[in-house]
Image (cartoon, rainbow, N blue to C red):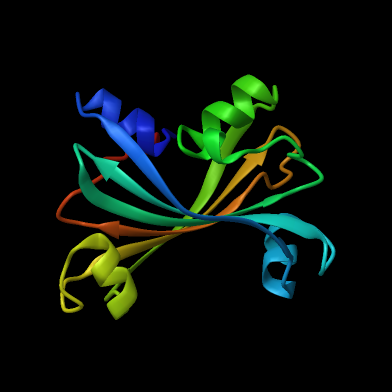
Length: 156
């Protein structure tokens, strides 16, 4: 499992992020369930546009527990979220659950990704977990398939 930044760097390309929103919210029932929290508990909501070589590659919406990550800043999210979790918080990420769904973007997402609403995208629902299988984040990723493809190896 590699982060967006790691995938870009392994292919010799530069990754970047534009933070579109960074705020504290009360967890909705859905977000609370995904993060094993109580409804209404405070979470960060981060919306960021990920770039590869200055091309809009992925729109990411992420929720993380404020109690678990009280020192999270915009600066951390401009870089690698996984690097922050592992290197600054000392938490080992053992993996992520990922659900892939081909879909068409909303007009807003199409505009952000600089594609047509008729161009397909890949929606990925992810949840990274620590060594105790406790969720670290919950994210919805909207990938511009013309700019960002990932190759996976699944051991037998």
